[in-house]
Image (cartoon, rainbow, N blue to C red; front, side, top):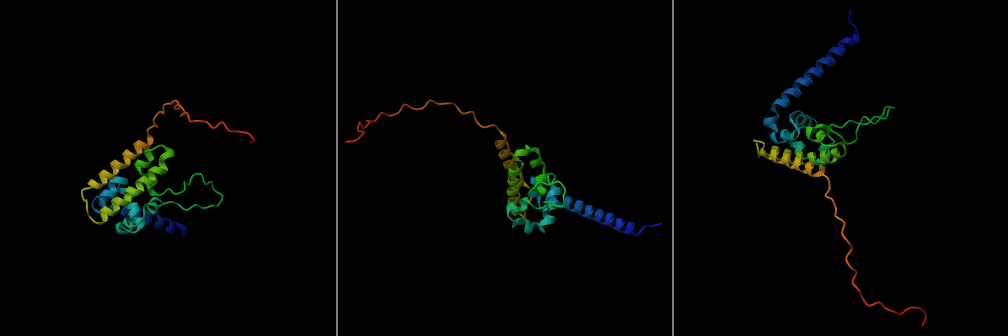
Amino acid sequence: MTFPNSVFIFQAVELTQCKHNIFEYVESKMTFIAPNVSIIVGASIAAKLMGVAGGLTKLSIMPACNIMVLGSQKRTLSGFSSTAILPHTGFLYYTDIVQKTPPDLRKKATRLVAAKCTLAARVDSFHESTDGSVGDNLRAEIEQKLDKLQEPPPVKTIKALPAPIEQSKKKRGGRR
């Protein structure tokens, strides 16, 4: 006995499988399509970014602040707890570079990755560096800046106040 809803469930599972197959194919081709973006954020997240943006050309003309929120979930205020949904966190928030940083610096790391991802997308759209050297340099810059953010601030030494410069004081005061 088949239920009427089982056909819809089967179609939904089949569509999900087709979507997964397409993502795997695009992921495998990302080293040829966008090598620099793939080096910075990874092939799967680069494929998701390009899919949501509408292609490499549209991703390259998009500002970094918009790339940062690509893939973010809309908040639904239907009585559920809003603590699970982080604001302004898209696909870039879940990259390995951002997830390796401490939680208090993840927002800064996401902004940094978005900025460098924009530059890499622009390089990829013009087919400038097909070997990924620009992506390697940008990723090294990201890691260097994140290391600098994570190191503790230098210890300040307590200095004595300088001796005041003696000036002639006016002795005038009171009523004349």
